[in-house]
View 1 (cartoon, helix red, strand yellow):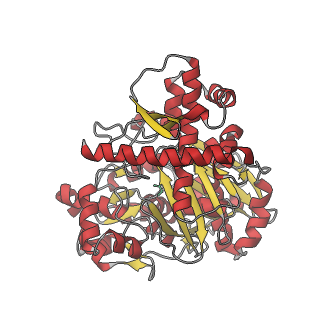
View 2 (cartoon, rainbow, N blue to C red; view 1 turned 90 degrees about the vertical axis):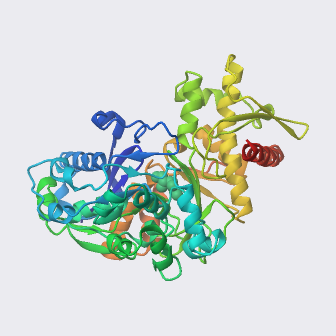
View 3 (spheres, rainbow, N blue to C red; view 1 turned 30 degrees about the horizontal axis):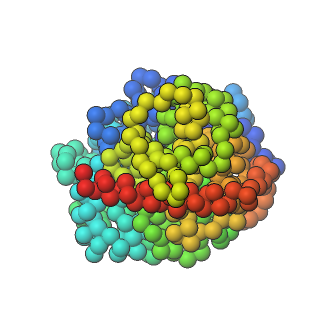
Length: 536
Ligand code: XUL
């Protein structure tokens, strides 16, 4: 009987999930929050404050510190000598720039010193741009141009050129900081960087996370030479290494780390992947058409598709860990927008929940475009919340800076942010021809039944919550199990995921017309607001 370990390094925290492979049971989970546990890195919500809201970076050394701390802490909680394999996932798109000391430092790791002390000198760039970064519009334009236009870029790489994707991010760095770029020996994704530490040598990116770079040819699953040329010239292919299939066994744990954390020397390191592909298997999305909502720092809607779908602007196609494809829409204004509204009205989550219960479906017409930070879908580079009122099928915008005074306004705001978020998601799903028959839900906000009821009502389909909050870490553990003993995804899903799904939250059909009307009004207001912004 062996154990497998799944790790997830998200924007704000690191989570470990341990599964007993024979029983198919989660035997342990633990998390560490970056801001709370590592204040010396100066992050707020896991990222570094910056005057320009489009520039969003995180210190990769913080992820190293968190990994060291969680793995050290596991020893008291589970029998780590039984851990047969480790896989992980990380926030997608983030790039880590390493100098030529990286390989030697990994090879020379010792067991009795903190990892941060041993690895502080390996960064060619001390910070990593993360998925919230929107500072690369110039580079996006250049990449789309180099690949024959945005549409061809989407056809080739699965997405039109995107600000947060790694290719444009690398291009910007090479352009703005040529000296540091010269000193860069390896460019890794957050996922492959963290796998490298455990392996003791640079680990490759897997196809799933590599499809979030605008560099991978989805058809051949190799880097596209024109995209490479545009983003980093000749040196880039060498600095990236070759991507490999998901769930590839990379080798045994670095001996010093096996000793440090108590893992057996035979413990295998399996490729790490992106948090969304990992969540897809952690939620049991292994069959064509299966859909999920991940309500974390970002809100993400994803669906498994057999072929390569052609998606409306703002959608992405990634390789899924099962080898199929996944269609994905990512909304940057997820939990941060909900937290903003909660805090603006001095509420805790209990108060937010009570506000949802005090208000009615459709919110008496009060709606919100929840653009607290730059938004990905639709593309909004200058943030600003917009409130509007749906009345007689017309929408009227009001000043987003109007101070809220009454508690009725606070209640309406709580419902408006949640209804606005799900309405926006439903509109993209409709446009992409995604009609969920069942939505599986994960992430912090999925713990809230009132929020999930709104999702069920807006989408008019049942919702089931995964009782393991971090389905990405669970998915990583399943990838480790799959890589080790080659159980089929269907078997693993039946054994591990099905028992963790909560009861169905049924849609209330009486509200279907209300949400259909709100969706139409939302779309009209969104178009109007985007037009206004294009003129200003
Ligand atoms: C997906 C995306 C986010 C991050 C969050 O494209 O940018 O969901 O993966 O960790």
